[in-house]
Length: 64
Image (cartoon, rainbow, N blue to C red; front, top):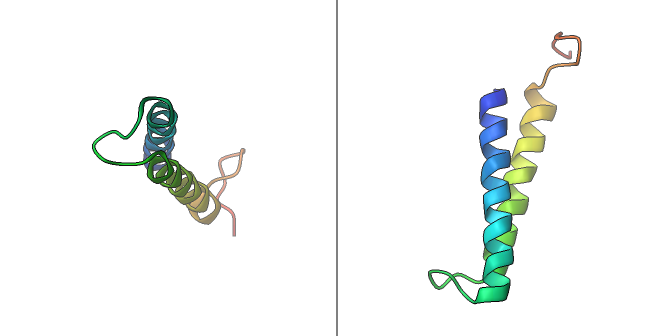
C-alpha cells in the first residue's frame, strides 16, 4: 500500500510542476494550468484517503 501512496504523491508533485510551468509558459498539449492543478489536488487527496483507510500506525500495528 505504501508503494501506491508514494506513486500517487510523486504523480501529484509532477502535476503540480506541470501546473506551474503551464502557468508561466502557456498551455502544454492544449491543457490549461487549472487542469494540472486540479489533477495534483485530486491525486494528493487520493493518497491521503488511502493512508487514512488502510494506513498503519507508527508502531506497525493496524488501526481498528
